[in-house]
Length: 105
View 1: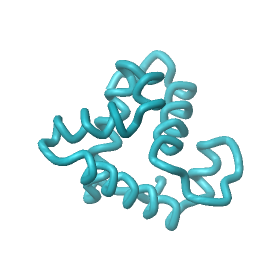
View 2: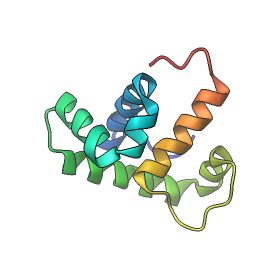
View 3: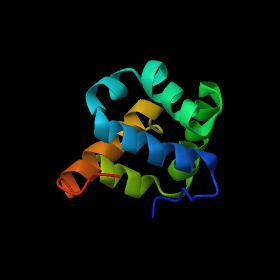
């Protein structure tokens, strides 16, 4: 368990973001602010800045509670908590390599 729980709004946003990445991962990961945040915000009827803040909060909680597991999932040591795009990239790579044929959210 990474340490982020469903009671954080960012948790829902990350789950939906991973679903969007399953549809077009390259473009969305490269343009998180332009594509991913607005699409998540539209789905949840909120502002993209709210999405960004809540995902950053979730990443901070995960980094504080279980940085070792996050680094294990990333496959490399990290000196700082990841950015949102790095976090999505880490999760996407881990999930797609662990469950390549079943990663349809």
